[in-house]
Amino acid sequence: MDKNKFVSYDEIGDNHISTSTDTPLREDAFELDDDTKVELITKHFREIMQIMGLDLTDDSLKGTPKRVAHMYVKEVFSGLNPKNKPKVTLFNNNYQYDEVVMVRDITFYTMCEHHFIPFFGKAHVAYIPHDKVAGLSKVNRLVQFFARRPQVQERLTMQIAKEISEQFHTADVAVAIEASHLCVAARGVEDTTSSTVTTNFMGKFAEDEYKLQFLGSLKSGS
Image (tube, rainbow, N blue to C red; front, side, top):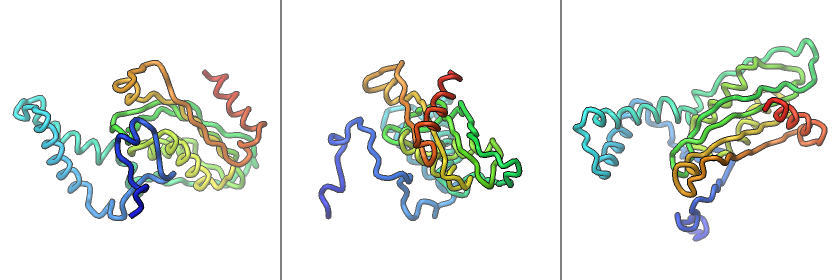
């Protein structure tokens, strides 16, 4: 076994590391149906609460394990399952529009995969259409799909850009995300005012002309 393959918490600390642009999933990730996952998570989260010394007979707490399990499977981590990926319908670009299409200020909430507490903010997505165009709401839906899974901001940015490129049949895509992380604000350094910005530029957006146009649009809208 490669001893360098595994690292301890002390080695990782609070560093945001990631091994791939793909979300780490086991091959058997979807062998269990959602109802079974809810049942099992309910059981295990109840055990966590009991270990913490909480009184699960209290009216306010006794339903919490089931609520958390339902939230994990059906809501905040529903983007793990590829069956939930939004279907994108493309239309012929009859107008031959070949300038930038930008959807700005897409609000998202996701969960930091290192501490399982939220980070949230706004995503800005632009692309240059070629022979096909897509409905603008599909950009928002794809952002939400990839946000609904354990994430790191760098990977989220890259996953959105890659998916827009593949689904919209264009190599020219730009994504910027600005987010606040509760793993920074509510624990650790406890900095409540900082934010994190990540970008991914593909195709023409890697060129200064288009990159500056994209960033200038963000600045003018702030």
